[in-house]
Figure (spheres, rainbow, N blue to C red):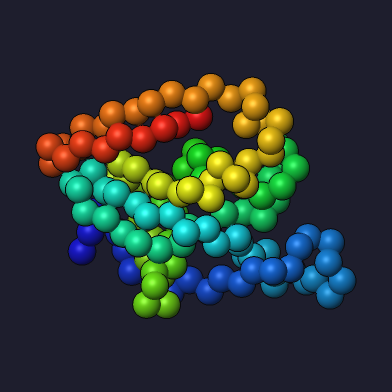
Length: 133
């Protein structure tokens, strides 16, 4: 078992936006799936899709990976390529990678954000170079 990842069965649907005709209370759990490899503190990795909220109260559009990681819940759901789902403990996550993340951000928000290089030294002595904004 990787870190404190917990296997779970999470039913997730997507594709219906809030305010859509026929939308009922049973659609409260809809998310947007984004491919995002995850590296845990010990160096192990999880390939899969993270689940982001389709709407936020802070800005127009869907939630970003950073916003999802900053929510108060201690775990987040990841759909694995096998079709299974797992819950990953945020405290055990070292890096969440997504090339799609920058293209999904509102251009105005991206234009005013600061970008900087990161050199991450993992407890396993592995190093990761990245860019953050």
